[in-house]
Amino acid sequence: MITDPIFCPTCGHNLTEQDIGGRLRPKCDHCGYVHYLNPVPGVGLLIETEAGLVLIRRKNPPHQGEWTLPSGFVEINETAEEAAMREAEEETGLKVKIVELVAVNSFPEGPPSSGIIIFFRVVPIGGALQAGDDATEAQVFTPLNMPLIPFRTHREAVGLWLERQRNPLLHQTTDSGFVHEQDYIIREADSTDLPELSAILKLIPHHRSLHGNVYWGEVAQRFREVDGLHVLVAQTRQHPPMLIGMVAFSVLRTLTEGIAFVSDLAVLPVYQRRGIGAVLIEAVRARAQKLGLHTLMVNADRLPFGVRAFFEAESFEALDMLVRPVDE
Image (cartoon, rainbow, N blue to C red; front, side, top):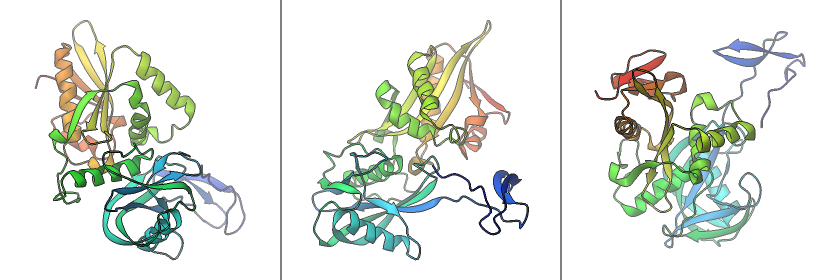
């Protein structure tokens, strides 16, 4: 985990936390230096062969021993495209050419620090497939034997690639609308979903400062033990299936009414603006009606950026606690 500096790199005096631009940032009172901790840029590679997609088995943490896309950070004085071609050769032994930019994604939750990753689809033009650098193995996987990728952003990129294999005519653009309701299902979450659920929950700004095994252990315990807690997930129908969104709500009953209280709602970035959040909320409404509840309440403080506007557009009142009747 990257920590804030203690001393000013310009003059050597102590830095103190001050509110600058709406955030607490280290600042030097002596020379005025302000330390900004910005996301680090990285690249990910969808190396496409006639047989399938190249994955590497990671040599080092995080996710040591698991299969992921070849990836790495952009070095000083190189473009993202140059970094992509360099990382491909370093980790897989393949010389590649770039076909297209697939997606730009963010990982504010880490690991280990906040970053932005740019995914390119590339094809080999030379070299030989062999593990190198941060990899112990390099192997081609077909859509039918693709493992579930541990990194959230990598999962999303692979999900886009798998969707394209199913329908090659689809264009991977933000307005393509390629995710339709027949492409995913809404179901009740179970304990095997917890790793993917925690990755989606970390997309919610409120949760990003709540790191550590203790906090996420408590989340897992509540998931298994709290009565009246319902967690619904949106899961793709492709192989391997992937969670692309979730919503959690609790049942509150008073003497005069029953309430469905939504505490968390999130959709993976590359699947946003495709109506999945609305489908999840409709699933909550349908479940609430079956449970005999009368009101749907949403905790506005737990909404990701942009989601609050969605609720207000859906006729929820713009209050600290957004309220809308279930049977409207």
